[in-house]
Length: 138
Figure 1 (spheres, helix red, strand yellow):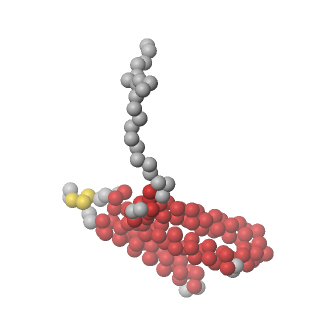
Figure 2 (cartoon, helix red, strand yellow; figure 1 turned 90 degrees about the vertical axis):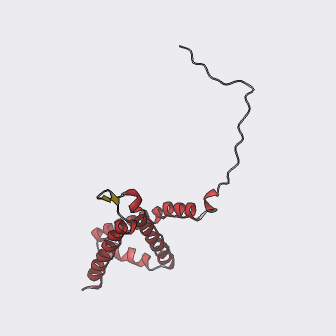
Figure 3 (cartoon, one colour; figure 1 turned 120 degrees about the horizontal axis):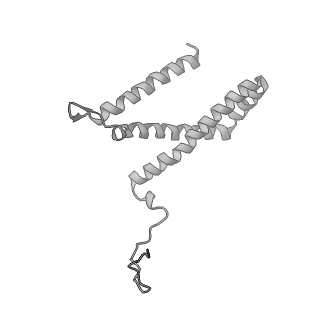
């Protein structure tokens, strides 16, 4: 069976407004979305760094000391500080998106957004406090 198309050789082109490559930078909500997506790179960096630290621990004290020495360089300190800021931004924005991803209804009524997001923040603070207690040597 032969297909037929409603296309002619002289069909006019539709007008399409040119869009800048940086269209996302004009509005804060789009810019925030792009930042959140880019922040995943820094989250991945922390994961890889932890894996390198664990590998160095398994290789012995000399290997671990070498990574610790690199982490004391100004470049590593700056990179880790920037990564921390982006990771915090990533975490906060995802926690704030939880109510949209998981709308909870009780008795046919939707729970307020803060009641869905708040447990994430509480768990974050509690787990951070426990980890800090272990790290500080409590």
